[in-house]
Length: 126
Image 1 (tube, rainbow, N blue to C red):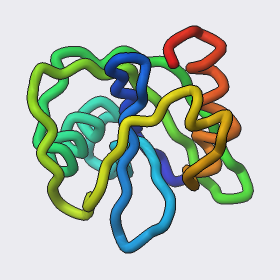
Image 2: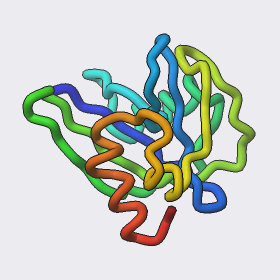
Image 3: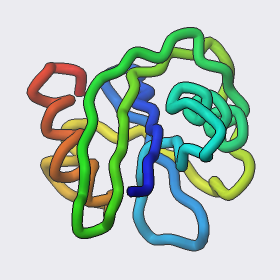
Image 4: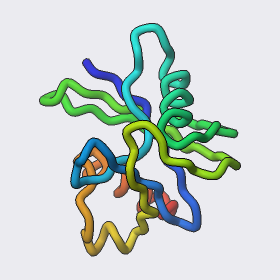
């Protein structure tokens, strides 16, 4: 099973979403866990590579799996004091609100749509 570490970064009740690889949809920062690293190590590495930031805290929030895609994602609430500088394969970012989700103006990854964003809204974080 492919294992991912993903970051939830929220500012002013808006979720940071990113895109790249010439894709037309958005996702949360993060990526695959390498064989020789922990989930938290992968999260920190991906945040540095993609956004040029260091997390001041990373607290486990939730996990979800898609068996048909053989994929599991661990989601962490991340705080940082650093300014975001896009790097690596990330070419655009946006701050996504509850209203954006309700109005469905942009395409976002399936896991965010079905699992993460509804929980964030339910928890009053967006």
